[in-house]
Image (tube, rainbow over all chains, first blue to last red; front, side, top):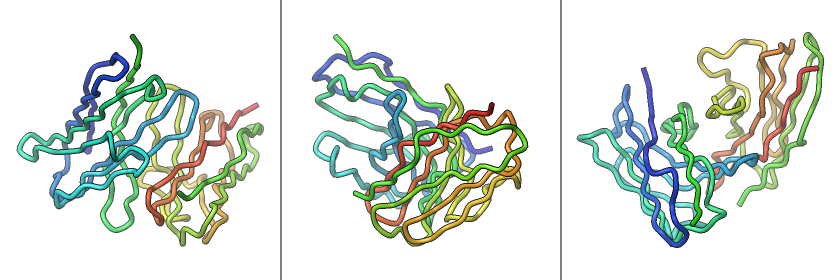
Length: 118
Length: 106
């Protein structure tokens, strides 16, 4: 079945870089796109960016200067790196599978909780 | 960015019908989707492209609307439907989410 799982450090120092990995199974990264979505506690989700099935990337303009998304198709992994973290970057980070054509996020990982604190 | 506005909270009794609204600041065609998020869990797709039921979702859930005004309806409501419901559009870039409607079952 379709599964996505986020992994990475739970605590990041202010001004440091966040690195997260999304490991997928049950589908191919060359057939489906994968997005990163984050959600501060008690608030609505925010789309961060996408790794398209063809290897192209798209970013939320609000985060573009700090964000990088890449992948390793041989390992079925998508990576997120975001630099210059601040306390308002604290939240849960999800990766999602996005359907081609309508970009519906039809499967979500369990989420990775990230706290930015010294 | 396209702003999606939802009412913050609703409370209904089991067996009743509830409608949750989402208004977009600009047209999104039919590219509005609905997700259910229970406490401590990831969001789960319920409805895609305004009115299409996602796989495995009970027929008690339905969606309607186009353009800027959309509605998620649950009929009849069950105790297990306690959750926060988010709308999300994928017509305009970037994709955006509403702030969510918290549904309480009395």
